[in-house]
Length: 109
Image (cartoon, rainbow, N blue to C red; front, top):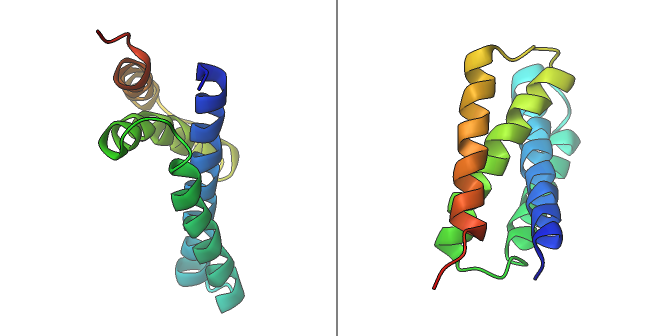
């Protein structure tokens, strides 16, 4: 699988996990209807399915996915919650992203 397709799957999984989790958050924390929560649950199940499309083993995929999730969560907070990340969030996100790239794509013998 080429890197572009793999990163696309990571981004899709991230949208499903963060988006689904956000809908459950809105249901439980913001008083939205149960339908919002149920939709969030369905989207969270899709996240689990999308992650299985990666070519690597479970541990490698989920460890690498953590870096993508951190970056996407920072941007979600910035765009959706209007919370500008501080320099430490950005630095931490870059460190996590570098770790993700090493875990998933560094050449192995």
